[in-house]
Picture 1 (cartoon, one colour):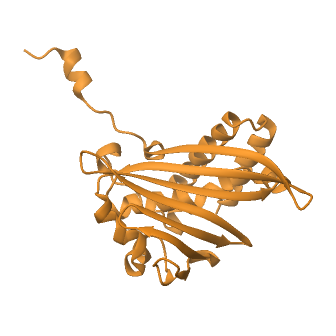
Picture 2 (picture 1 turned 90 degrees about the vertical axis):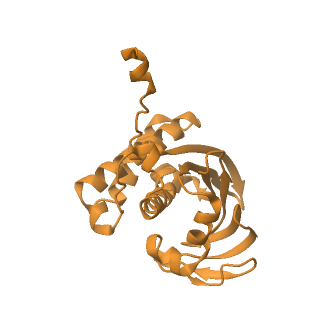
Picture 3 (picture 1 turned 135 degrees about the vertical axis):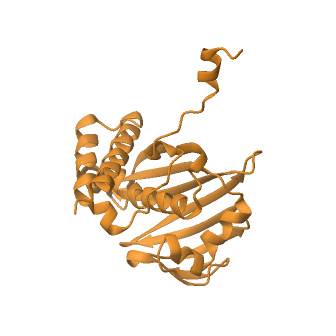
Length: 226
């Protein structure tokens, strides 16, 4: 006869969508050309119930990218350049299919290193990590914190999970497609707030003072209000 407590322990609890991603933040202050800067390294990691070989075309084939990320034009090969959504552009640095893609991500005058890794797990799933290193003026960081820089990647991972149904095992629910209308609605606004809170927690853990953290958290939420 099954012990009720053992049966309860055997049930795997589903994660909320916001907790399907693990977040890490490293920051240090620098002075470049006489200007105080903050170097922020944002790392987002998630598990998707697809193999690296299945996920790789979604990251490197413009037609597949367009389905969930947005239109990307150019040559997504080593040394190639591309243009992406919302004025982004960049250059592919190294390609190690189907496990590693490093590039320079250019947007709003910044040229930032971006590394995407697809590490296979024993159960056939993939640990996907996205590492974005950015250099911000200290005043800009004080106004917006890390959340503003991370929010596009949060939305992108949500979109990828929706496209692949890759969070079905961890969230045990259908993942919403983050369209502009959805992000402007109550569910999207709630998720933006949850993302902002979690990046604020990372900033606190990295040593940012609480007043600056809360200012950045609110700025991130306001930036995505409809």
